[in-house]
Length: 146
Image (cartoon, rainbow, N blue to C red):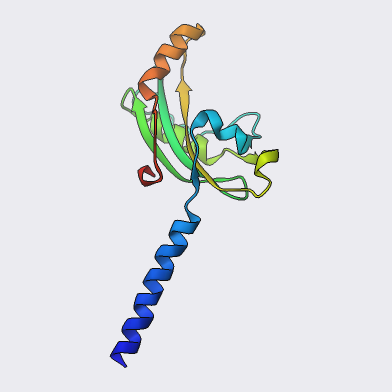
């Protein structure tokens, strides 16, 4: 009886590990995200506290997420925030409210893992805005970084 229980447990663990590897989404760099999913929000809501650290400072937050088959986001993680403070919580709430539609090339609605940089209180000048966002740039993330 113990051998049967052990065999069932081992099979369950192997099957679970196999299912997780099959279900892992494709990692897509931000520049290629629109090849799979198109953001349909004309604006994105954010949960902004009345009082927060560095809430009025120019800054950025890099946030990773999975776009699921229904176009919603999950497994949201703040990867980087500059300057340190509460902008990450705001960026996380923005990512939670994003909605996507599949591109023509993604008619099968493949799940993807990607990341975006959210700017805050950015200057009007394009060069200054780009400089402000550089500290949040992430060249590469993998599925293990979720």
